[in-house]
Structure formats: C-alpha cells, structure tokens
Length: 285
Image (cartoon, rainbow, N blue to C red; front, side, top):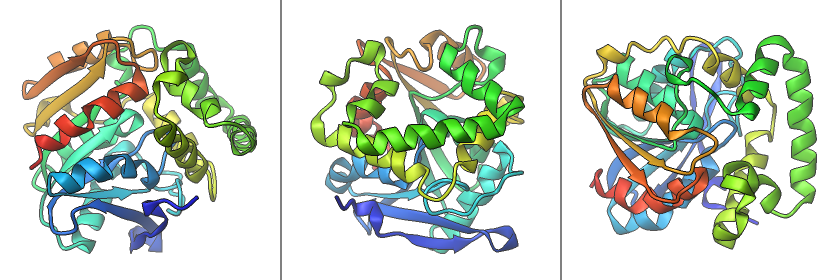
C-alpha cells in the first residue's frame, strides 16, 4: 500500500549523511516540523494530512538519522536535533517553523528549542517521553529497551529484527497494541492502525541503529538545559497513557516556565495523538 510519505526528499548533513523527509498538508501553508516517535518514521506524519490541509498547515516530517531512509549517525546526541532542524528548514527555504513531537520525538524537540530557538516558533509535545530526572517508575518495557541499548545493543538490534519480521506478517494490531492501554486496539480506526504498522516497518527499512541510539541516549542525561528554553511549550497527554505515565509529564511541565499541559481524559498513548491532532494544528495556523 502506498502512503504520501513514499515520496520524499533528502538533504545532506555533516559527513555527507543523507536525511530524508516528506511533506504533507498545504504546500503553501504555515510550516510545522513533525518529529516521529522511537521507533518511527516520516510516514506517521500522514496522520496529520487531512487536518493540516484544512487548516493551511505545511507539515515537514523528517526521518531522524538511522530511521526510514535516513543514513545512520551512531554517535549523535539528543542535542544534535538542532542540526537536523536547521538542515531541513534551509532545504525547504523556511526561516522558522513550529514543532509537533510525538512520544520519543519529545527530547529532540526540546533540544531543538534549546539550541536553535531562533528557528523554532513553538513546540507541541504529544504523549511525549520524559527525562529520567522526572520519571520515578518508567514502564518495564522502557527499562528493558534502554537497558539493552546501553549494555547489549546487538541483542536489541536482534530483538527489533524479530519484531519487524513478525509485524510484517501480522495484523496491524500486533504493532498498535504496543501503544495502547491494556491492548485496547479496537478503539483505533482501521486506517490509522494500518499506518502505525507501516510506520513501524519503515522505521527499520534500512537498519536498526536509529532506535538503538535513541533508546540509549534517552536513558541518560538528555543534555537539554530546560531553564534555557523560552519557546512556548504545550504538552498534550492522556491520563491512561501507560507508555509514559502522566505524573512524569506533570513534573516536567513544572520545570518549564513557558509550558502548558492539556490532559485528554481516557486517552492512551496512540489515542492521545489521534484525538489531539486537530486542536494541536489549530495552534499553528
């Protein structure tokens, strides 16, 4: 099945690394960068397509290094997100843009706001991951993935290889249940479920280094000086999100003087993204 994100452009980063990105919505609209989760890819940006077109928003969704069609960058840090923002915005001839970040895209959005605040208008973080400094009890799966990324990266690569093999041969619910509370996949529309599966497969289309690098980095100090962020930040989080408990998000928000938090009742990880998209984009018109 084809997706809008199958058509993509590339831009060159340092050391001739190629970074892929796709665009959705209104080509002449207000520019907004979309940061996918971990693992993830530019394809997830197509979830924003209808609402973005209706609101005159131009969504630019890059594959972070090591995901999708972007080259690996194994020694990158979270703070290197700013160089990705700069390269992509320069390539599309845009001076400033908003950022919408989902899940594991959160640290990269905050880092870009810290290091390249002059290029970032505002940031919306949807079901976003939180740093270890505010996360008292991370879910077991997060501890497992971060631990393997740090101590046994080859094992984690093998795990992702196996998951990809199974996902390719399974119903979309196999992937979707990783982002729902208690495996409640029935609440996710069929077309969205198919896209989540396609996004997962595309994340590992060329390699698995992007996910390993990011799980390792997320488990340590994000190197993001929260007190240096003066960009407007909005958090959107479901109160039944088991991937990222909302109490950790409340702690993170309290450390950001410019941040607001909107809580979505009875929304888990992926439901928060699906339900918040229209309202999030409305802020970027």
